[in-house]
Length: 338
Image (spheres, rainbow, N blue to C red):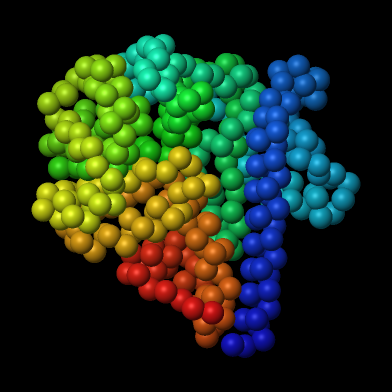
């Protein structure tokens, strides 16, 4: 490897560290108190209302994350990350989602489960979409806020949120709804958001839902499925997702598959990689995965040192660490050893 290539890799290592620093700042803020920014604070920080709300919000968020724009290093993080991260969302636009409009979630308790509505407060921060990956591998988490309260349906197990249909879910599932066609299978039921939107499509013949929890299936069949316009297009299989993909799915010849068996990015990578290893058993099926780009981020930096140690050039490192390169590693069961 040339000295120029080595220098580029050192810069890539610095980018990796900045990515991690930014991600941990946001994680701490969202975990500890995502409601520190309020309507009153926004007004106080922008009395003339000349600045865009997103710019004001990004500056406040950076401050609450401990950054000082008088410091050159901190200012670079604000400019490179925070200003591109923050998105003001239109509550009315999200409320027009067909699931939100047509499906009514009752406030009921069933065994250890509870259905109800939760809400984001006005100006509360939350992850709202997939991360942005720049050409230099800079990764920017997307943080959204509404200027008014926003309700969303949720299901709780033993008092803990098990699944909810938040703006992040609707934004990151939209692509898989648009791509679905023919005979569709989805792994993971939740509140039936994906099956509902997919079953409405004229070019979708049927949708098979694979869910391992009998209680979740019963909740869905009792309170949600009867609200579907064409429930006859829906089939539910109570099974482990990976066992089904390996042993039953090859005989079904599905056209499209969507996997969503993980709670969020924090626990999804092992399950994502496990399902990718099974794609070869279903060669005629097009696979897609919830929050795949964000999962690939974790995989990228997990693979980073091994890729660098084995690559012969910086261009090879870039190819291996790209989303397409990582997908190939995962799907073809290639293992890179240090």
